[in-house]
Length: 135
Image (cartoon, rainbow, N blue to C red):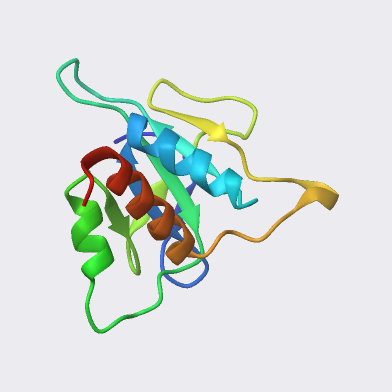
């Protein structure tokens, strides 16, 4: 994936969680119901036979003894990018590139809000998964 010149390093300040576009729309809707907002970047498919994904920015995932949530979410195409992973950003919050564009740009100025906890994105993902497949 080629994108803007700016890359963010996951782990200390933020993590990125990617998922298919349709599933991401469900997760975003559930986050908003809970009055949470995550910056979201669309990563457009490089080839016609591939699918685009949405990348949600969150607070870093807290270590847990088992990754049951992540295992369940992976069945829906969800991937967690944590410590040591880099992720490209679109050229600016108001414009995109062929590969990357902001769906929900990060807030600026007085409206700044903290990134949602990764666990909130996971919980909304699990609820969307349950709605889709019933388990």
